[in-house]
Image (cartoon, rainbow, N blue to C red; front, side):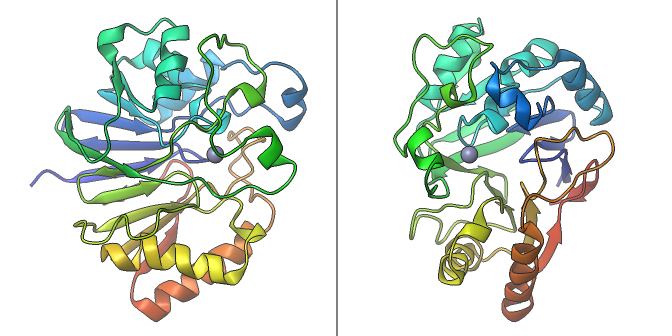
Length: 276
Ligand SMILES: [Zn+2]
């Protein structure tokens, strides 16, 4: 069996390779600073080029989106321009693709649970849920927020509404791009590795973390847990990643849960590659 390898590039930017096939999930290399949120956001083609080059990516088969907030979706059009591939995601992702001039034949609007063959990969999108925001973020980004038909980039950060959220299964790996879940949706999937985005979990009670771990890790039978979206994504990545808020506390708590329930828990490191 051909090995599946995962490389990490901050936030939930994942590069997945198997033989000659490459998938990207939530690629985000531009990382504009916090102050840039006052103006309209633009992808940074040079940072994207450097990121793809560092990842050793020349050609992409598919770019998959867990949801369409800016720290997941801002770069996708430019990534596809530079490295090719199709965009696979929600209706909001499709609106983003159309406004960015991506040809219709390279836009795949997701049907839940359908099995997609992309390059040498088998991919499935399961129902997901974003981490519930508190004020004022839940006012700016309501749960049912969608990207509008007339989005043009550059755009304000709030134009990147969430759209539908998915847990993305690539082979035996299940990726959560935000720390939310749909109860009972992942039981019985044949999962070896789970990628958990941990950003924002520190704002939730311990009981939420335990339920999140139960639903995403224990109910899938995964043995390997990889933690993403732990970094301050308002800082460029050149000098390495810095933690966001109190994410180190959450990481410790997840490592404790892994020790209790028998999973290995690793914090994804920038530019590192993992066998999954
Ligand atoms: Zn998000």
